[in-house]
Structures are given as C-alpha cells and as structure tokens.
Image 1 (cartoon, rainbow, N blue to C red):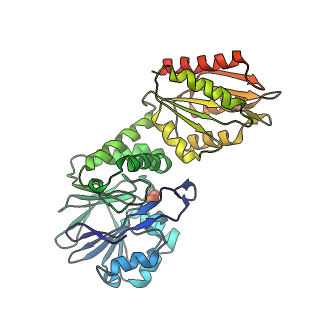
Image 2: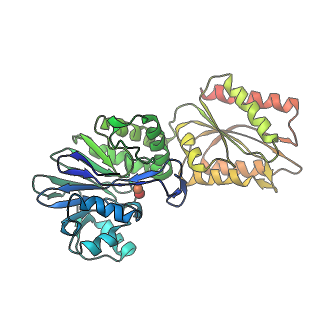
Image 3: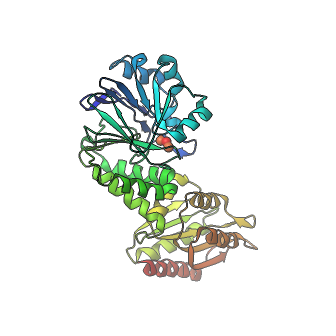
Length: 397
Ligand code: FEO
C-alpha cells in the first residue's frame, strides 16, 4: 500500500500482510490479514517509528526510499521488539549502519539477545524527550503492553501517539487507513477484540495502568502498529480497550458462550436442547463447535460473557481433546471467574465430566449445574437439557 501522510511530515509506511496464515505462529489471519504499521517522520532529523515483520522487505524500503534516503535516517524508535515490528532491523542496519536505535533499557538487553545488536543503541527513560527539529518525541514506558520492554512514543506538536500493539487490531487495511475512511468499523472492532484477547488480554493490568498514564495527555491521533489509525475518534478505541481490560476482573456482562464438541451427534443433540432453553430467556448467546473452530475465535466470546456452558463427550476415559485445548488456552489467557454449566455423553464408564470438573477448579469457573447421559439422549434427557439451559440463563440474567 502506498505511503500516507498522516500529519505534515509524518507518514504511514507500513506493510499490509495478506499471506501469513498464523500470527505469532498460533492465531489464524488467513482470511483477515494484518498490517504492520510503521511511520516515518521527516524533520531536521529523520526518524522511523517501529518497523515491520521481515516480509515484503523490498517494498518496505522502497516506500521509505520514495520519501527519504534510507541510509540517511537518524533514528529508529523501537517501541516493541517483537519481530512483527522489528523483523527488518538487521536489513536496515546494513543500509544505514550509523542510525541510532532508540528504545527502553529492557529493549536494549533484548536487542542483543534477539539480534546480536549492541552498537548505536540509546536507551531512554520514561518521560524523556528527543527533539527532531520542529517535532519532539516523548517516550512513555508501558511495560507488558505487550512485552516487558514495550513503550509508546508521543509526538508533542501533533498530539500523536504511536501506541504500538495497544489499540491495534487484526485485519489488513482495505485501502482506508483512518477510522473516518473505514466503511466497515464493525469488522475492525471485532478484530480489535480478537487481537486484544489473543495477544494482550493476559496483560490487562498493565493495559489499565497505561491508559491511566495517558489520562491528561492530549491525544488527537492514535497510530497503533496494527490496524486503523484513529484520528476522528481516538477515544473510541481507548474506551474499548479500557472496557475489555476491565473484564479481567470477572465483572463481565451477562451472556453465554456455549462450546460443544460431538463425535457422533449425541452431544450435539443435547447442545441444541440446551440452546433452545437459553433462547426462551433472550439472553445473549454464542455457540461454537470446539473441534471445528480455532480457539482464537472462541476466546473473545469467553472474555466478554459471564457464563460458559461446556458440552463434551468422554473420549477414551478422558475429556474430548479439542475441548481440552480450548480450556487450556482459556487458562493461558487467564479467563477466570466465570459461571459455568457442564453436560456430555459417554459410552460406558465416563470420565470426561470428572476431568472437566478438575479443569473448572483451576479456571475458577463456578459450576452451577451439570449432567451426563449414556449413549444417545432420551426424551427425558432432552427435557433436562432444555431446563439446564433455561435455568442457567435465568440465573445469569
Ligand atoms: Fe505486534 Fe507484540 O507484537
């Protein structure tokens, strides 16, 4: 995508990635894509803010070359070392060996570990400034949003915040860079939530601290390292991040995520009965087949809803493996303190529910109802399933 001037002398020069299948090697983005937003500031001194993953490297440097000679860059600000933002760094240093890398002290250590780089690194402290001429950069330490070395960079004359991962989203840019050019904001907000829960949610405490730190700072433009640049309504993405980070406490809106898996359709039959019961109450519901839905898409629903219903068959005396994977990842992402119901089928001796119950303890999910049935559900079982769904939904509402 061609460069875009976002303020006088400040350019978006990012890379739109529509070919990577798994972000961080885990999270599917083959349908949605992602952008690695980097920025170039042309003043008396020339500074890059963040870089890109090492794909389309020629395109990245060509974009810079249309605006400035890459070998003449003075600074590269590295807000965050994760290689989706720093992957082209060694190539850059071959082109511009004298450029100064500006980063946090922690990042300075990590530069050595990740890239063997120790020369021309300037570690900055919280609140420190760097004059580029007419423009001045101020560095704001925001550790663990999303790695320990992370900081944000604020440009004082334009009130422009380069926020790196914070306030970002999955979703390649579709021509429009700014929130006011975007014709499908629902897509980006949904992908911002998925990105938040997949990547950042475990660090919700540091996110809230960072947002608190930004209070009182005039913010006219928020330029994250992924997704849209927010210039019409920067408060919108801050409010969303604040709301989502707040859910880490377990104080979450009423609603149900119903996750099921079924080997031969018996647990699926029961899932339909349970969903029918929930539907009598009108409570918000999302349903996922754990075996056919990547956990990336299930986690956001768990994050924003207070209730979970798990329906899974016993598999070789234990919990059905695809469901086990969903619960593992919920624990990794610290999705704790939810209300839960369990159901499932077994063929002879059971065992799935026993394992489910022990998982509930480690997740701190409060089990309010549960039942198991053998083989195919009987009419009485189906009635019980409808009652379970309705009763659970009424207790949550
Ligand atoms: Fe976009 Fe934490 O890297």
